[in-house]
Length: 427
Image (tube, helix red, strand yellow):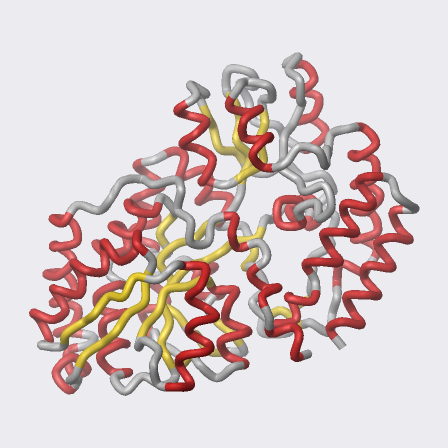
């Protein structure tokens, strides 16, 4: 089990966790400034007593994009409460491990930004504290709060939701496909080089991007407990649905629809060049397509099986240090300042990902059809498992998918071997 607490859980978060390459523009200071008035009112009602009783200072770790917004919020917070806030810029990809190593020494921050799927490692290392959202939880999208809930406790204030969807070149495909088979037929009818594109690795495939197709066969990675949390004792993808998915993978590999020689960069380039009407990807590749002159629509992911195709959702948020000496002020800052519509909207505008707060989420969806497309798919997505056992899944999962797509053996036998190896690693 110790090995499961390593970096495996981060294997696929690079698809967009901290690299907000779809930069929707920095937040205007007028917008974040208005957060101060809204936040101040909230502090006087919900968190007024907390703000008055708090003292000292706060340190927050954030990446460059989030720091830009938080600096404005911190100034408002200090004016309202007298509590100084220091924003320390960190490389997003290094925050989790630095947090785990520094918090026990007393050198870490009071608050840090991060991804929800870090939770298993953070909780098991005893470095993160629960955040009592109370009635405020109802103001956020359900999937956002669910993602930041671990073993029945909420550990973060969510601010963005990210997931993949199907990009469509509307000139080549005027209508959205109803299912995977129809999508491939539409792609072939378009007469382009590729009927459909998804970036894959020649040795590791890409379980993250292919997961919606897997779920459409009724093969989630893990089953769930009565409270809806992931249960690592139930390796659900080892069941019949997973074997059916494995057979489908082999068929798509043999047909050339899934091509391990087309990585993410080549898939993006080919779509931007008009060589396919469809591209399974995330919001980070939208700007490039639009700059290339593609009229892009964002559609639900077409199911290959007889169930809905549900991608993973990654939810970013802010979490508290278990060693913070100013939990009252830190909680007040998150709930009554970062949790306001003005700040959530500002974070969305600088990061380009759908906001977690329902008010900001609905506003963003009404104003931007691209965000609306991803947001509607994300609302039906499933949170990336945050349990540390997920770290034992990625490597075997990816290499086995690649072997099946290549035709390196019987797909069911390869899938069963993978499932057995993963179950043994978890045990």
